[in-house]
Image (cartoon, rainbow, N blue to C red; front, side):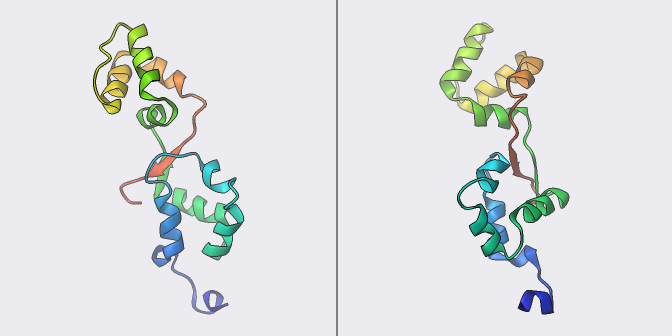
Length: 126
């Protein structure tokens, strides 16, 4: 009720900041919106969860993740090493290094490998 009378600054809302923090690591929107917590989020935020997420997108607080982030989300290190072996590439290194090697060697193949993956992450602004 007070929100309706005095307005509401979502940027100072602890609940909105907590929701935004859910996207510090790339994740599908469905992880948040279709979980058992969906209704709870709406109650805690004081507004519809989908409206809050749309605002994050519109304001540039979250964005669709790129190929590298989608690869990191979708594949385990063992999967990435297998992909590297198939391409005759070196398989040692950290996960990010493996991903970078795959993208450098086969950018189109990596785009295809994550074509069905839709994950979002915080931007620098977020």
